[in-house]
Length: 91
Image (tube, rainbow, N blue to C red; front, side, top):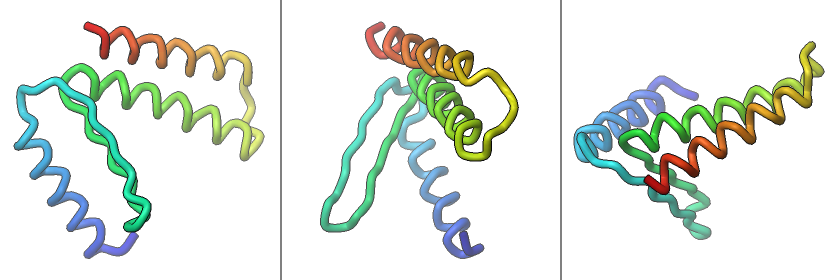
């Protein structure tokens, strides 16, 4: 990612953060014409979603790069993170 792109992304992140301060929500959308997927989460849902994506990413890297580790354990972590996210969204 180029420096200009990074700066623009950081500015957008800060703007969204200020707009959603104190709110609890999750929204997503995909634009076929723009080839853009946007996901926004705020409040406790943001942390739960981050944990889910972190678990998925770690599992993906374990598979892709054949990292040492228990692949079944990584799958269990994804399921646990998904369950936590769903419990948070239902609150």
